[in-house]
Length: 425
Image (tube, rainbow, N blue to C red; front, side):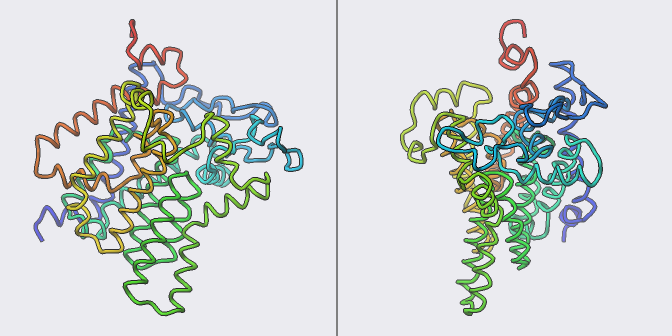
């Protein structure tokens, strides 16, 4: 084995690299927050997020004190602090009153990440935002460590494995791996399910895939992809009936998070689909997959010109996947190719169908979980160094100039002026 490849496969390199990537994200976010908003990492030390009156307050005080705590972080912090304790009782709900009518009830977000934060806070006594931050860092670190596992390197090739990891981290929303968001946990569970599948630890893989479906809506794609891959394994092996029964059970287990969440919602609120219904009421539209076939020009226009230019990144992602998917996935076993193709199609499809009517809002973050995109981009650009350099530079510039500002600036007094380059910025 050549010395460079031997070094790339060494445990020491694999342990160090994720820490370097995460440190780089934190340094960039810290520099950006200081430069544009004069914000330290923690603007309220000693004042952890909390409720003065948890039965009526909409969001906890100081939830935004960390620069990595923005946007949906408030909902995960809220869920971690009070769960569904103060939601209206089921018997009080009806056609004129919904659970999401109450500001204390966070039914339009999946609870998996918040539950982990609540558990770590209870075990360690740490402030809830630091508990969630620790979970994000740990999940991202483990995901990147598994990204360079022998299963990935043997299938993708060593060079493409490391190149795809670089492309993932330099992507415009790479900062999400250190933020109080669900991408880190979903990324780890996606990679862990794949590694378990390759090592034939099917029960562990199903458990990881099922957990992803409790973390975020697009996590459902991971459970479905794992179930499909396990079906292919069993079919190709001409499994016996007893084996089919066991693996069929595991296919159900790969959706345990979603099944459990829906069951809880039915028992607690009398509506198993309350998440979907709450999102419809909040955004004032019903997700329609058919809208992807004939999107309105206003949606497309908004996705191109409005920061952070979600439609541009979606188009670029689809283009790179089309250019490199065959070469990138050719080294994987049949069932693994099924897994990765399903992950890509379902993750992108679920997100795009849900967001098309609001200008594909959030797609540049949701693409982080369409992992074959980064495999394909690495395969397409590996032998084109100039194109590769241009893409990495463009991604990093957009990361620094647009997307990270759009994330950190949310809630700051000069957000629109600074991040949207209005006069005086």
